[in-house]
Amino acid sequence: MNAELAHQLRAKQAVRSWRLRVVRSLGPATSLGGVVWALVQPYRLTLLHPHGQGFWWLFSEPPLWVVLVGLVFGLVVAPGLAADLEDAEEER
Amino acid sequence: MQPRAEMVHWMFATGFLFVGLCLFCEAIVGQEVWRRRAWRAYLWPGLAFGMGVLMWPVMTFFTNSAIHMLAHSAWAQVMMLAGGAELGRVRGKLHSDLWLLAVPLAFAVSGTSFLVHEQNPWFFQRSAFLHHLIGWTLLGASVFPLARVFRTRSVTANSGFALTFVVLAIFLYCDRDLAPVFGHLSPLAGVPHR
Image (cartoon, rainbow over all chains, first blue to last red):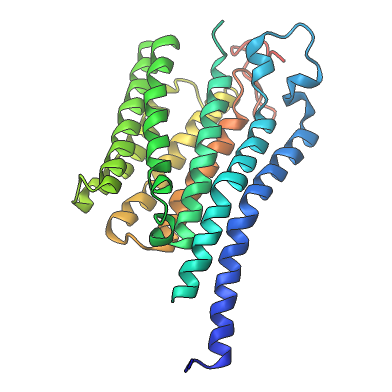
C-alpha cells in the first residue's frame, strides 16, 4: 500500500521527467548546435571547398566535431544513464 | 605536417565539450546514479588525465616561446594531477576529500598560465582576446570545483563546474590563429589566413 498522496507522487514524477528529459535531450541538442553552427558559418567546414587543402584542414571540421560529440554522448552515454535514472527513481 | 595551433585548440575543445556534458549529467542525476556503471565513473577523470598526457606533445611541438612551453607543461601536469586524483578516488585508492582540491588547483594554474603566456593586449587579435578571456574565466570558475570540495553534492557547484567546461569549449572553438575580434586587429598581428 502506498501512503503517499497523489500530488506528492506527481511531484516526484515531474522531477524524474525533468531529469530524464535533460539526459535524453543533451546529445541531440549538442548535435543540433553543431548543425546550426555549420549553417551559420559554412566557411568553418573545409569539406565544402576541399580543393588544395592539406590533411589537417580537411580533418579539422569543428562543427562536425560538435555533431559527433552529441552523437557519441546521445548513443553511448545517455541511454544507459537514462535507464539507471529510471531504476533509481523507481527504487525510491 | 604539424596542425595549426587553432586546430589543436579545437581538438581540445571537443574533449572539453564531451567532459562538460558528462559532468553536467552527473550533476543532475547525482553521483550514485552516475556511478552505477563502473565505466561511467572513470569516464571524465580518464579523459582529463588523457588530455593532460596529450598536452605533452603540444608542449613539445609548439615551441613559439619559452613561456608557451612552460604554460603547456603546467597544463599537462595539473590536468594529469586532477584526472589522476579523481581516478584514484573513484578506484578507492585515495580516501581523503582533500584530493578534490586538485581540480580547483588545476583551474587556478591553468587560468594563470593562460594569462601569463599571452603577451599581447586583449584587442590585439582574437586569440589574444580569448587567452585573456579563458584565463579570467578559469580563475573565476575555480570557485565551483572549490565549492565541490566542501559541498560535494551541491547541484549549483557541480553544474557550474560542468558548464565551465562547456564555456571553455566554446571559447576554444572560437579561437583562430589570426583573426579580428569585434572588429579589432592590430596591424602588427599579420594578415589573416582562411
